[in-house]
Every structure is written in structure tokens, then in C-alpha cells.
Length: 208
Image (cartoon, rainbow, N blue to C red; front, side):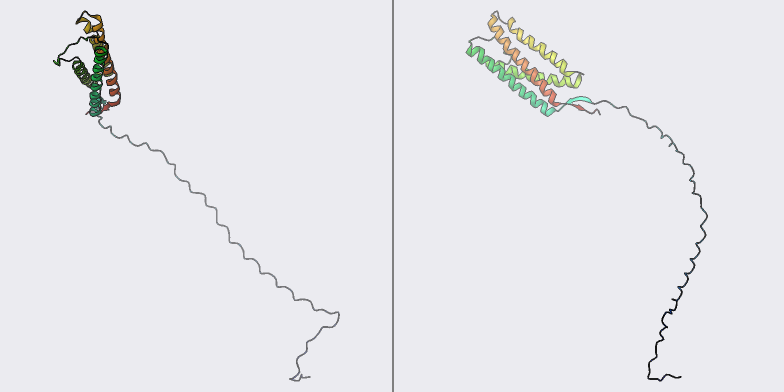
């Protein structure tokens, strides 16, 4: 029997109590086979490394080294010597003022510079003694192994002689002791000040 063309197709409804089974699920595709494992390759063994001792270099000829020698910073050193000479001259002037002008003790002295003045003789004598001592110390630094020790002994003995000499110039003990005291103070000042100057200006000079 033919269906008229203007009538829609009808859906077939299953009868009551009858169900069509669901369509079966498609079976999963088999997993691709794993490629065969590559054969294990043993690790490469590096050849042993042996320590090599470098060949000794030929010995170079060594020149004998000369140890440095003692020296002085000449400018600061002689500036200190001049300052020491000024101090020594002032000690001489102060000694004359104290003993001769205040205590009225006539001093005895030698005047190799013909100053005809006690104060001038002590001032010039003290300054000259300081400059001579500075030159002596400079010479000892350049030529002796222990300049400070030699300088101390020389200045100490020279100061002792200068303090005792006035006793041979007069029989008046007071005059002689007063003059010797001034000489003693000048010598002590020269020794102590120049020793300090040496400590500040001494240095080692490389030998040529």
C-alpha cells in the first residue's frame, strides 16, 4: 500500500514490554606493539690520565743581593739639627741670666769667638756644639752599625768633660760649678733632641 505523498511518515513505536537491545559498543583497537628495546650499550671507559711532572727549567744565574744600608732624610734631619742649635743657644742665654744677672755669680768661660760677652759666648758656643754634634751623628749613621749607641757615649763623655772643665779655669768653686751646670744642661739638651730627630728621620736606603 502506498503512502500518499502529502502524509508524513510515521514512526514505528515498539510494542509494550518489548525493548530493542542497545547497539553493541565497538571493540577498542588493539594497542600498537612497543618497539623492541635497544640493546644496552656499556659506558665508554676513558683511558687513565697520568700526572706528568714538568721538566725542571734551567736555573737562572742569581746575582748577589746587597742588603740596604742605613740613611737619613737629609732635609728633615738638618732642620732638626738647626732647631736643636737654637734650643742650645737659648739654654746658654737662660743660664747666664739666672746665674750671672740674678744670682750675681760671675761665670767662667772660654771665648774662642772673641765676643767679649758672656751671654754671646754661651749662645754661640751652644749653637756650634749642636751643629757639630748633628754632623757627627750623620757621619755615624752612614759609617757605623750602631750609630745611636756610639753617639750617646761620645756626647755623654763630651758633656761630662765640658761640665768639669770650668773647675780647671778658676779656683772659685761657685763660679766653676755654675758654669759647669750650664754646660751640662746644653749637652743633655743636644743629646736628647738629636736622638729624637734621628728616630724620626732614619730610614733604609737600597744599595746600588
